[in-house]
Structures are given as structure tokens and as C-alpha cells.
Amino acid sequence: MATVVLENVRKEYPFDNSDKKKKRKSKADDRPEKKSDLEVTGERVVAVQDFNIEIDDREFVVLVGPSGCGKSTTLRMIAGLEDITSGNIYIDGRKVNDVEPKDRDIAMVFQNYALYPHMTVYDNMAFSLKTRQEPKEEIDKKVREAAEILDITPLLDRKPKALSGGQRQRVAIGRAFVRNPKVFLMDEPLSNLDAKLRNQMRAEIIKLRDKIDTTFIYVTHDQIEAMTLGDRIVIMKDGFIHQIGTPQEVFSHPANEFVAGFIGVPQMNFFRNCSLRKEGSSYTVDVMGKTYTLTDKQCEALDAAETGDIPVTIGVRPVNMTVSQDESAEGIPATVEVFEMMGSEVHIHMNADGSDVIAVVQTSALGDDRIKAKDRIKFDFDPGQMHLFDKTTGENMI
Image 1: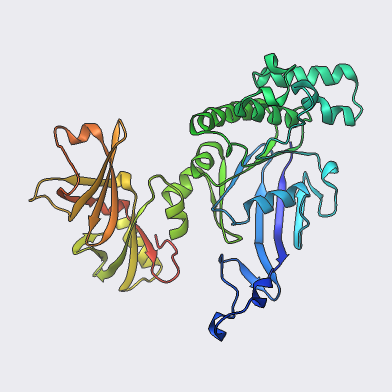
Image 2: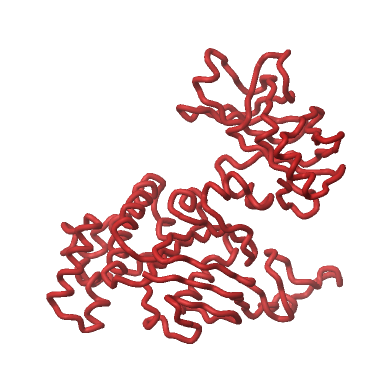
């Protein structure tokens, strides 16, 4: 039960440039291979840059982003497992930069469970309480209450090797839960589970969250986990925060092209060679030979930014696309490449003038239409569903 505040937190690691010593054929090759877009300062790599956030008491915040973006490093700094290079971290109003992990009143659930193989489930869950020398009766009460909440009471006498992956993860969560920590940290706890079990465990974590009055900080690379679990989502890339917002905010109003492409399954469609033009009091945009007139709300936003005639990238989510096999219908012509039946909906992958486009259409909306590979169809969308991105900066313009 605590607030967590990070102020201008930064983490740097020494840069391993040993590959510079390798022989190369020319001076042009005498540069270390660039493996990511992390900033390199002198002989150091900046893994996390100016991380700022205020996490409210009992809030569930998810850090999400591709591998190497700095999310796990941030979590480990909060836990005290990594030293910060600069900035400040506060837990429940107390500055913890130099406080040992055991004294921060946090509990952490790791990706690999980290259970003691020689101990029973009961002993694994009771271990931290025993090291605190809590009364035996109190330990037993806490362990059994946690086991009841997590539905693992029948497993208390088993050892980890006799448990499934999902059961082991529940034990790991229970071990952290019995400590009644101020902050619950979870580092990709579901990544080792299969898809069906991940779905079940997501639901279990949501139920658990309602039963535990504590602050959650959860790290994942899976944006579906982020969208379903978080009160707010922190989207990271290359050590930077790109957007912080509720799941609905980051889905409906992505801050930039990276966020728009990262959040949402299937990924947003991007049309990169588009022209925005101002015509009187309104704006139009040309997408693959078709002209769309923007809505009044979109035009007001562009006017406020004093936008002129510029090249832009247009983004449209697959669920906002419509398709038609009628040759006389309005729309942009395309060729079907893949038709995926997903049950209640279908995913139609198309090629339009060399660009990959995907539409998600309700199966019932197709009626008796039999769309198949190599069919010529047309796709369209409501201009009000467009996202306009600055061609240079990638920032969302409306």
C-alpha cells in the first residue's frame, strides 16, 4: 500500500567495445556493429533515460515494450537489484536510492519462478516469514490464507518438481503475497507458460489484484497482457518512455507511430506516401490515389497547429477497414494474399500497390461472399478513423 515515484531516473552500463579489436578489411568496417538504438555516451550505454512517473497507491501499472527497451532494468532499479546512475526513487514517500532490497518492503515475482526445489510448497511460501522470525501460528495463518486465495491448498505438501508451470507460478506469487508488501513487482511472470495457461493466469492475476490492497508494477513484452491488466501502461523503446496512459488512451490516441504500431493486434496499417493539403477551411489527404476529406474535429486540430501542405503517414486499424468485391464500389483496389478464418471474424491480408494491408471483418458481415487468395477487392475506411503522423518526427498530429 504505497505510492512509487521515479524522478529523472537514468541507468548507464559500460559499453563492451571489445569487437573493435577484431581485424577488419577497411576503415569503414572499423566500427562496432550497431545492435540497437540505445544511446552510447563515451564508453557507456544508456539503458534507461530520464524515467519519470508517479504511481498511485494500489494502482496497477504495466511497463511494456520490445526486448531491450529498459523495462526490466527499470523494475530492478525499483527493487534495488540495480543501482541507478542518477535520479531518485521514492516508495511510500521515502527515498530508497541507497536502501537495500530487503528493506524496501517490496516483493518480486520472477520469470523463472525461483522456487527452492528441495522445499515443499508450504515451506517455499513460509520461508521469508521464517527469516523474519515471525510467530509460527502467524506464519501458518498467512500461508494458508494465501494458498486459499490462489487455489493451491491441495498442493502445500508437494515439491516444485511435482507441479505444472501454472501451479509453480501461483506458488511464486503466493510466496510474495504472504509478505504483505507495499509494492508488488512482477517481471514477465507468464512468459514461460503456453498460450492457454497465460490466458488463465491473466484472469487469476486480475482476481488476485482485487483481493490484495497493494501497488502493482508489472513488466511484459506482450501488449495483450498490458492492455488487459494495467490501469495505466508505460510504453518504452530504447530506454525512453514514449507514452503513459490508460489502455483505451494508448489504443485510441497513440502518441506516435511506434506506439500505434506496437499496441493493437493485428498491427495498425500504415500508408506512408500520403499528401495532406489544406483546401479553404478544410483538409484533405490523398491515400493511394483516393482523396479523403477530414472531419471537422481533425481539421480544428490541424488548424490549431498551423499545419500546411505536407507529406504524412496515415494509420488505420484493421478493425476500421471495410472490404468489397463489388468492382463499382468506392475504395482502393487490392489483391487478396491470405484469408484467415478466425471464427467470428476473418483477417484479410491484401497487397495494394506493393503495400501490405490487413482488414479484420466480422464473418457475418461477409454473408455468402467467398473471398480467396488472388481475388481483386476494394478496401475503404472512414476518414474519422485515420491517424495522421508527421513524416519526419513520427508524432501523432491530431
